[in-house]
Image 1 (cartoon, one colour):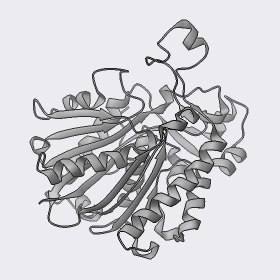
Image 2 (image 1 turned 120 degrees about the horizontal axis):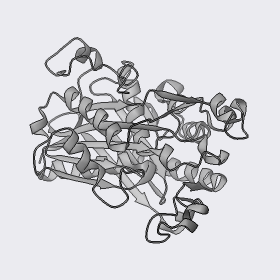
Image 3 (image 1 turned 180 degrees about the horizontal axis):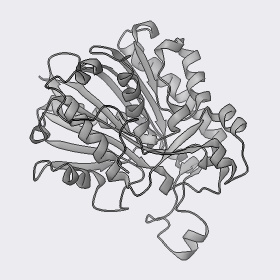
Length: 355
């Protein structure tokens, strides 16, 4: 039976930066308070771009870095809670069209909030290892600025826009080792976007009550997240007979520095093992983990064979952990112009401007 491997990683961040100083002018808050409570210094905001645009740019680079041709991709799955359209078409369908992938390609969206990328990994792994597909493009893409109330200081300081993408392919080495996903729908109202669905259809009253915006009970979510994330990581490590020192990089969902630090300390991870990007991107939901992986990859930290532990918790509630060996080429090799890099000028998410 073939094994599934993550053979490339890429990301895209919009060029506009919204700083804490900018938010001080919009709501009653301060740079000191935001940093102390969240660790966030700035976040990216998409202008004249929608979620599929962000996902397309990340996906384009992920395919280029994989060494595959576009015609080799036989499925596209997008995780998002801020899709281009409420019902249809799926954001994945639009991305596949933007990328000019094969006519008739399998394309669909999933909604697992901040755990979206780990759910994507599980789906892609199953498709590849079953033999149903050989090369699956997975994308976490979010324009959360479209569902955030910028008069609500409890949420507007937290979220940003961006996208991350990866190609999962059949391989004999550096496989995805294990993935755990889970959910608990009994506490769904603690983190929710209430409106615009069948529960609260679009109406003047719904808009007046701002039910189209994300709502969060921050303190309750914080407590549940720390406990759940810690338990999830312990379970996947124990199942695979590994310890924290066996992990090269711990890459948690980038929601809040206090959550990340609490989980890190409980699991005895060292600072050099942890990847942090929350300070410059904020919480980008399903895009958070692939954007963080990409940051460490482009910095030359993650290399072929690096053992990665991913961990996420999000609305639903959903949560999950993934254990994998990185199966892509080293970033230094790609930048040297190997045959695996076939888009001239694309180097990193921080150097690309599409605006």
